Amino acid sequence: MRYVLTKPYVSLYEEYLEYERPGMSLQGYKSLEGLTRRFLGWLEEKNLMPQDVHILHAMEFKNDISGKRNINGDLISQGTICNYIKTARRFYKYLLERETVSTNPFKEIKYPRIPSHISRNVLTEGQMERLLERLKRFNSGKTKKEKARLYICHILSEFMYSTGLRIDEAASLRPSDVNFELRHVYVRYGKGGKSRIAFMSEYASEILMLYLKKGKSITDRILYGGKRNTVFSGKTGSLMLMLNKRLRTICHELEIPVITSHGFRHSLGTHLLRSGCDMRHIQAILGHEKLSSTQIYTKVYADDLKESFDRYHPRQHLGIVRT
Image (cartoon, rainbow, N blue to C red; front, side):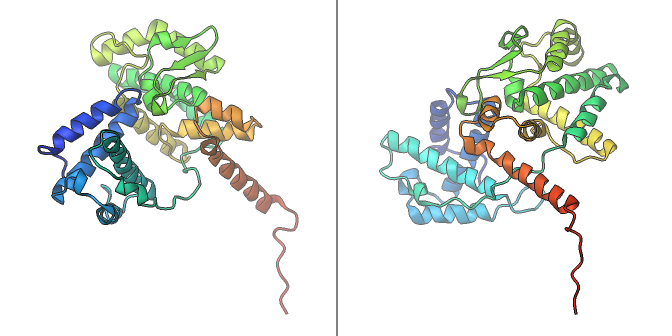
């Protein structure tokens, strides 16, 4: 697939993204940019304009996408295939509204079946406690810059596990979005461009307040040469890379499963459920639009229960007497 578009495809690309930009989260917009570019690149390779595409072309697109491989040489996931098809459908919905085309051929293409489960990007409560305690040792850095990065990783990790925010939501926060008296965080641009209120634990609130009062000005000067307007200063991509690198190192040291920044959100949902928190409360805390998104955590809980059953049932390990 082409990554560099030529006219008139680039004009379509720019007009469409300008139409979609209002209300989208930063991460969602970046994802849409890349997927749309690849889709239009596919059309250009096939020498097709949008109005020329019919159902057979849509089926061919799905087949071509299904054969794509990632940077590791593995076939892309079913979820990624779904994202490509969703992007094509969304683009054609836009064209229909503008009356550029008369049908949406991608609406007839079925999504591949995705297993209804959460990823392994989750730690137990005990593992999370060990990880967060280890992240407190930010003074172990050898240089001022390294110490500054480790300090931000410590604050950001506690904050994300407390609030359940996604990394792009955390990256876009401004100090004015944080209410320390109520321990509220105003998320202006959540997933789908929707705003919501998130909540901080007392500990996360205290260390974030200290960071904003004293630490941020120091880390901004060391890492960026001056004041930055957002709470965590860095952009989504740089914060994610910095935090994921730190998490990978510490998880290996502690001999626990390696999680990414999104693992704090997954772990919070799982831990709240195990503690008896109402499912709809978890839905509100995590900002899920649909309850079905929250219900994936019940799968993890059910797996835990079965493991306990298999381990502790008094007759589970009896052998069968064969004659």
